[in-house]
Image (cartoon, rainbow, N blue to C red; front, side, top):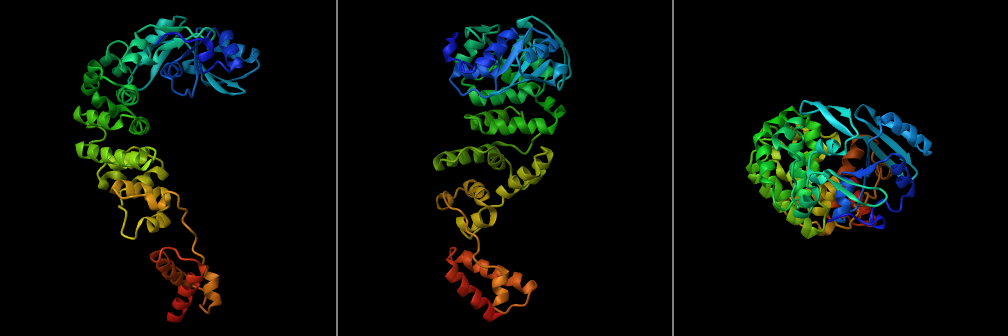
Length: 386
């Protein structure tokens, strides 16, 4: 891996972005450069500049764009371009850290800025005009080797930001080949530091990790080294086995990996409610996590999909090791009967209408969702019986 020709860069077709980068004396940095070198699609593009945030704001305006001070205390300005926003951050060095937050000072030293980043593969910079690469800590070699490696002393880097423990494993699950033993040992030694983090931050990293390409062996590695013990003791090797089985079923069924479904596999069924609350998942995700562990029932896949929605049924069936073929391209129908139709048949308005509707619906589901003619017959029979 080396420099790239300007035409091969992901910003080659964004002349306004290149012009702004030049005006800001900036370089592209971080994930955009890493993913470009790996041939992956580049989503967010970040710029680093030696200019002060105030100067950045002035020059963004001079370029005809809107500057938004999204993180100005940490030197970050968002430049709103016609083809999408770009974050511009002044070069920084850490003054103080407490494991969760950092106090920074601005600098014009590119190496100082690189030194405060987490992993060597995330500390690569690229010239916006020539595509030339700037690598201060061996990130290119590590990227080529599939090695996630801390910049500097891993123990110290984790002390600065405890979330780097989970990021180490997430990046290894996505990009890693050979594990960096020094990094692994440091993460294991400082695993209790995760207790100081907000549960929302832990959840965000864990859910990203669970859908990475090598999630199963990496989660197994984390369990083996006690990474989850302090914050998610429910996760054990039995959970890893369930996760592995689910991942195989997803692949066989052609279903994309899903973080909440995989978390449901990783946890014991009776722990879903507790862990969902501890991780402060959204109400939607929490309900889905709990529902996914409820089992597929005995009415069949389509009945399950009708009652829970196709997505919920896919979760339960895959977790239970059952086929989803019958619901893959199926849209649950609506019951072709209304309460009004029962009233027209002579039933008085009130609870009896709702009861008979449920009775007819249950029979309709049991018969495999027959057409309106058959539903009419079921309704007639129910009314006659009533």
